Length: 317
Image 1: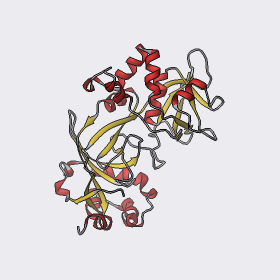
Image 2: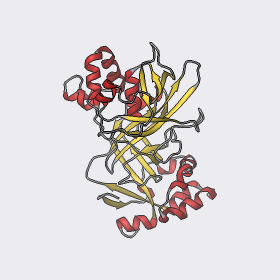
Image 3: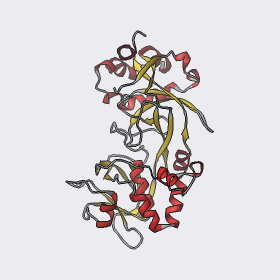
Image 4: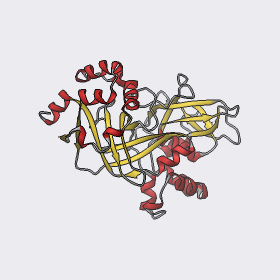
């Protein structure tokens, strides 16, 4: 793990621990437990499927550890968008989503879009350029085709340029104050200012390529970094240099809609950096997008680590 401070806590220190649905949390943990290769995790991962007492399972095999790097906790939200698109370009569907080409080079978002560098690698065409941009931000999505069927898209690769927050750029330019900014505001502003909006989106030079996920059903969540479907309200994206992927994580999110819940670190994100940083998965569609877009809250998260791992990092339990 990256350089950080580690503080051993007890389960009594976790606000609301006893009231959570530990069975639901254990079910989500089981979805990716077999993907954890660290030998120190093997006992807990092997015995998890046989547990008849989910709360007791977590309390027996894990220790709560507060991992910090000096930065304040920040919770945000993400979701799986559902967009209108077509496998064939026409006057309505003109904005391509590309499959990963053999060589992405170091082309920026501006160069890729202006020069159509990867023509011939289109997976699908979208009706709205802002939808295409936010699909890149989320890293996965559903496309509803003209015949009503659903096409699932998942992350395949990037062009190598770092992610730049468009929201922060709008604040810096004086377009909007921080308390008014949301995904909806960005979308409306770009639609109302198409030329300036296109230039604004190009500030984020990072570009994402996708693959079609034919193995997922319509009921499955999108694939996370552990190559398994993520779960609404129980999956978080973390910085894996601090929090091991697959680890149970107790979150205490503050704000207008507080959340105290055991979640599982099953995903990552280019903007998710730091020991106290998490992105909560809110589900699929416009309602989930609205919920996710409102989240920018403090609090804390506490990682549940196997006792031997906690001892190696923080001393005797």
